Image 1 (cartoon, rainbow, N blue to C red):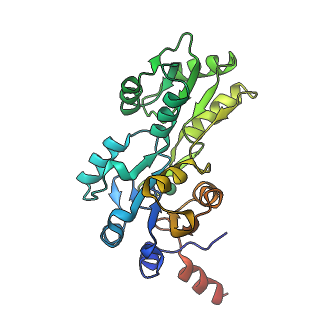
Image 2 (cartoon, protein in one colour; image 1 turned 120 degrees about the horizontal axis):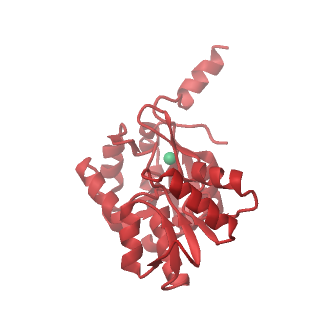
Image 3 (cartoon, rainbow, N blue to C red; image 1 turned 45 degrees about the vertical axis):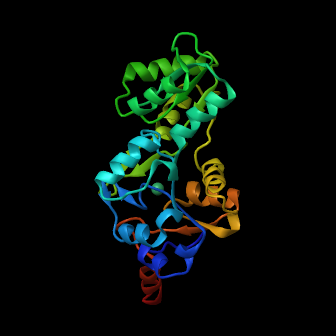
Length: 256
Ligand SMILES: [Mg+2]
């Protein structure tokens, strides 16, 4: 596994000069609603070569672009690829007009309607599970009942948690799925989110850049690193805020 480095170290390397710089969002650019150190420098250095590739399944690219702009990070929606949105767009392309039991926050609900996916929790063709902080116990019971009935599942992303502003783990879609499979152990889900390479491949296709000419910076080896490896893109592991970076690790090792 690569050693984690700080974003400032990455900025001092040739990495940001690649034809495309793909970046994870939570723990790399943002922590909660806080912009992490040196991220404005990253945007200034990379300009339109910077792409956000995130397992976020709460926002759409449009809603996230607005949120980022408010935080002083002007990244247009066209350079933001998100697992939740990609799941719905892929579904619309594969099964236009499908009847979908969608468990998601309102930006994805609105997008599903705009794409022509038909909301139906009684007799759905399939179920989509995204991150919805308004999800209730009754919703969980509905999800479990549908999984028990054998309704195919698209899980936006398998992450168990993402780091909150102070490092406290925030439950993610994978934690919800763990609750579902605790109740229905035979349930299986398909996910296009990282560690699958789909988000990265889509970003590179949109950028017109070959994998060897790109780099991906992320804070989670199990998802970001694995997705980079599967897409054939060089990976740089960033230290999470408050976590020791490589120079600190080396200093600690040499003092032992
Ligand atoms: Mg992350």
